[in-house]
Length: 239
Image 1 (cartoon, rainbow, N blue to C red):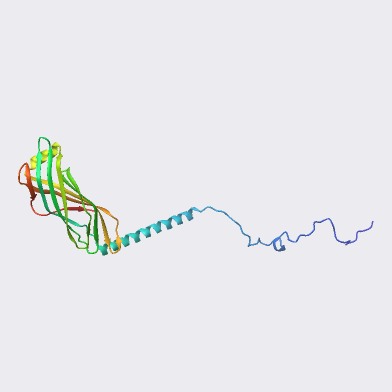
Image 2 (image 1 turned 180 degrees about the vertical axis):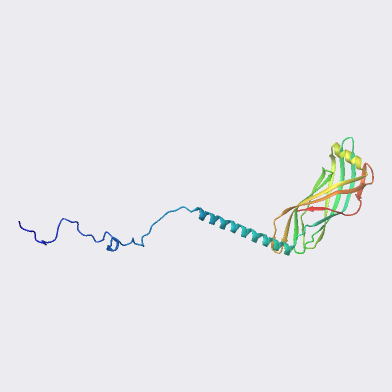
């Protein structure tokens, strides 16, 4: 039998060679390339969330400390004080009350002395409402024009009240009959106040002035006039 020739030309029937080798770098044992980009979508881990939360809390604490530090420095520099109120005069005229019809007629005049003790703060008073009460019963109410005070300023403020044939209930009538000839009234003042230092204006706040038990001695038990007894009285101020 004849033996085949050791080399009889190229072997056909195999796939044609490609331009790319099936193995990186032509070596089946070479490590994978390092320049491949892998997109790995991962949700934040609990450790990342904890770190973010700590940073937010730290930022809030720092901002709060800075705010109160600035506020304290401003307070120490400005040293704000509430205004001071005194009733220097209080009078009643044309006082007349009818027990049968429970009708009251009278005129009242009050004068306040208002002092701004601040060295750097200027004060403005708006929407000033003044009320006159006998114990807790409202007898009359009036509005006062706005007021502006410079630093270390002393100003007088007048308020006038009137009651013309005004009905009063049994409790008011009994209180008047029991207290005459000296009656003690409560004078209340409320206003929107604003503080200004330089070009800075602080927000408005409600100012309440309580002048309680202001005594007036009547010239007659049933009618007449009267004036403040005991001299000037200091009022309580709330803001």
